[in-house]
Length: 157
Image (cartoon, rainbow, N blue to C red):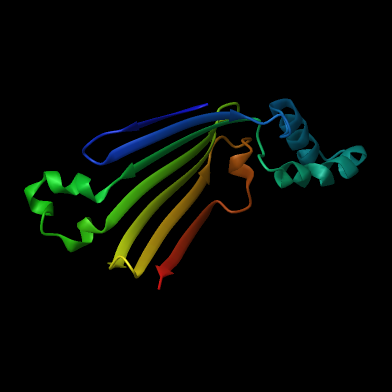
């Protein structure tokens, strides 16, 4: 289930919610965290299976995604930005993945630059920073990489 809103100024927002019954439920994650942190030797085989929950297509059952984007047209509304080549070619975006049951968040900020675009040929530079956070026992906060920096180069020749 989702919704999209766009404004003539160049701002657009997408919001989505989805449920995946194949992912572990919150109680299954709570049990996995409990077993993994236990010093009881009876739970050793169970605690080693903790990583199986992270191998699913979706790792939590309830998901909320928010995506915001500014088109370069957005910058044209201010006089100071009209002559900036950098702002005319920049497409900033923000993606938020939220696990509402445990408060985990994956936030990704994107800066996308059109370096060259002649119609036949294009070259694009994309910079992104992804941060994973949330409550101490949230599924997303326990992902092994808490932050990533991505650089993508795309072209059409």
